[in-house]
Amino acid sequence: MNQAHSDALDQLVRKLNVVTRLSESEERAIRALPLIAKTFAAGQDFVHEHDQPDHCALIVRGWASRYKTTSLGRRQILSLHFPGEIPDLQSLLLSTMDHSLAALTELAVAFIPHAAVRAAIQAEPHLAIPLWRLTLIDAALYREWLMVMGRLNAVQHMGHLFCELQMRLEAVGLASRESGFDFPLTQTELGDAVGMSPVHVNRTIQDMRRLDLITWTQGRLLIHNFEDLAERSDFDPTYLHQSSGLGAF
Amino acid sequence: MPYYFFTTKAGATVSDGVDPIALADDDTALAEAVRSLGEMAKDQLPLGVRDISVAVRTAQGETIHDVRLAVSVKSRGA
Image 1 (tube, each protein chain N blue to C red):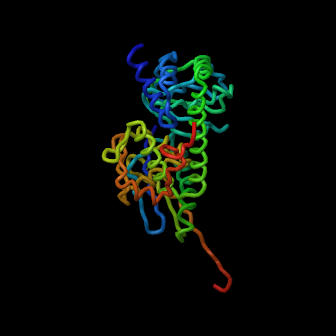
Image 2: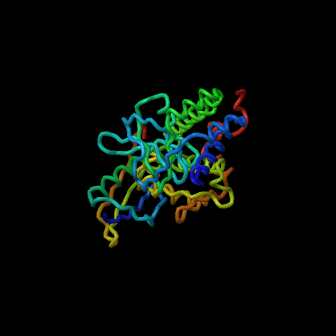
Image 3: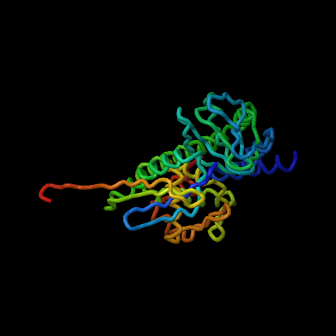
């Protein structure tokens, strides 16, 4: 097993351990999964809408987006994804993709054959629980994004997204309160994620700078006072289900 | 693609477009200005702001569009 392969599986084990407590034999089953490593350039799709994949895509390095496009070619980014995540996990049980996945940065992906995931679950049935939990948390994110999209103003919407990213990236060791996190999106991509025109994104970011809420320079974003921004943005991290309250299993 | 600067004004608050935006052409810049007016209106009108505008400048500093949305209210007895 090469280092990249091992790093990818470390990230997956870490991610699964956030939502469950893997036993030694379950962790062995995960580490035995075969991977096919591929890299993609920024902007390149790695899973297409209407595909019927026979692999799941584990993100190893870089950022990815899940998106759909209207018949007029207008893109809506539906969610953002980081190392350790499997954004097309649903393809294990729903054969046809109803959205696409694209690289937002240069992206390293490890493809895991569905057959190998199914075999691991058959050997270690409890592994189905953390995978199920990940898809439930995915659904919780959509409920939150829908509420934010419909009911918050532009500064709150952006603030809510930045708080979410801070917490999700912290959970995988890619952000800290002191130094913030890499934020590689362009203002146009950010607009596609929050459903705003680039002009309105531009104005909103300026408002946030004027209010001394954030610094965003050279692809890095720092929230000046997380608790303050969370309160202004109606951000309650319960929907991320990162800590307690996961219950039995 | 050419770059455009957008200066927005909502009531007394002016945001100078310091970050240029790359767009296909002047017509696309106009479409984006109009779209952003609608988005600003959603946030600003409930706050009592009644006048919103967007000015579009080229990279050379020439203003090519000035788009404005004003709301007038006539109430009974006023």
